[in-house]
Length: 174
Figure 1 (cartoon, one colour):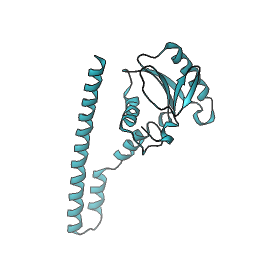
Figure 2 (cartoon, one colour):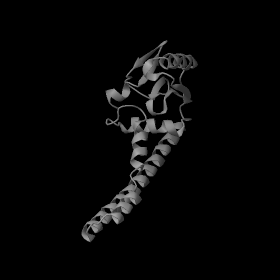
Figure 3 (tube, one colour):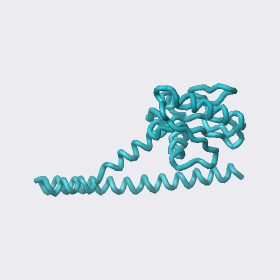
Figure 4 (tube, one colour):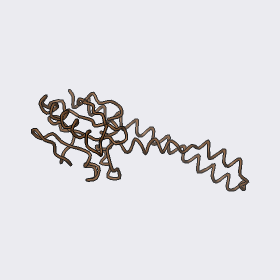
């Protein structure tokens, strides 16, 4: 499960009200509101077996939340279990992985984008402009090569993990 700070941005519809910091998330019979600060969006996630009434209540609460100061002018979007857009699948991944290091839903998306700003080409360009000893250049190039290899392994692992998750979802859906 994610950290308490993280779950402060998650609400579960309970009757005609909402409950902050739910014990469970993504129960197919429930409806949740998940605040995505980076996208200025309130996701309304409706489980496959959730009641229409709870979806209506969630939409009403999303309208109330977006009129409050921290979420002023946020939009909201209803998504159903199994039909989540890619932007939301990031949040599912964070919760499934129990990312205790994150402060709010969707934060890993921001970290991923910031991580991509590290450009090996920029480092190589800087090396060629500065007067650095050949030994240091060789060491730096070796480190950069290791980093590239690690990136490829991570990318492969993430793709493999996603395939396994999809396989599990297929098994559960049948």
